[in-house]
Length: 466
Image (cartoon, rainbow, N blue to C red; front, side, top):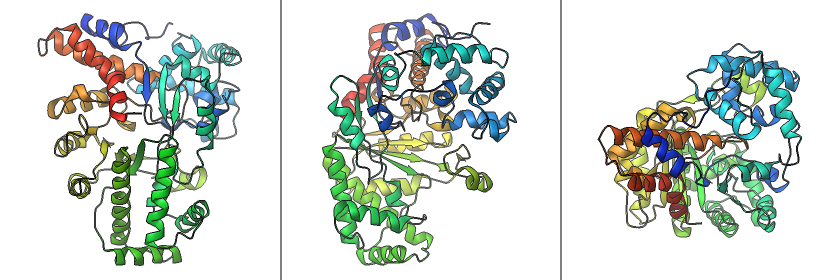
């Protein structure tokens, strides 16, 4: 049986089809937030089989397999690669209604030319055909990026990263995609997590002096941001799982840092004060350098203690948090704005309940520094599906300016996740096409086509200014 993926997939009317095929389909991709490994890009890595590239590190797929009762041995364990692949194919028929059903078929068609409907019965056929494609000379990391029409990639990099692989990529003029670092300073902020003192030791080695006082810490952070900027970084990203805000004096912060370096337990208030101070320090630096900061809000991570001990973090045991965000997030942004140092900011919520909260909060902090300086980001993680994307765009349209939206990103570790941009563009075109055909917006293809191209790529080019 052939898969459901065809030219008109998810395009439910003629206007939607015109917008997609004539305006969206061939636009380049600006992947401004992902978790791709720059070393693999620098080395133009290859893959041994479809399991490695399709299932390796993909917690979306792992979660679905667990829900289908697949033993962990066939997910992250010692089972053979074919056994893992077959177990996933057997799971696919049970993912109808889940974006994995669409993504998986899109990925197979785009990168392997396979249009079969995925199931356990044809797993061996798909395995053999896909692996034959992988063995060809044209299947490597860089070839995949080029095939996907990706113009920009912004990876996710720690404050202490050497960025050596970004340097290697930049030095190779034959590779046209721009691959740039984006700062993810979670380890710097997580003063309450194990290894914080050791991390400051690593930072000390990098900057050449002890990072054991507040003054030294602020100096080191400024130097590292300058280092990132010199290597092309123009974005940062923060995991604000729980949004809190509490200001502190320099003396209080010095005492908190001293306690942490000694290994003493910190109170929740002390942790909040430290994180607030670091977010304000970083935000001001981002503004000075003209960066964009991203706040990813509302994840509750590593819920399953037993599996955390067995497999570690980021293995598919996270969920949506329901903490309130409006008041502390407003205070954080206002503290930066009050000193005219709020950088361009993208706000993502994992709890779709907060779409309207973020959209209205963004509207309170706009300025002429940039068009829609504060953005509401694309449907993220558990909202990265048709319903979630539509809700985010409708909320933005209702309460902000949808046409200024910087659009989709992969937020993925996989080099074959780029069909998610195609998926997003189809959903966008269908939304606008439906509004037009129902008489809610003008049936003006030039106007709507320009809007589609802007959201697909052009707004990101202007906003990130790279």
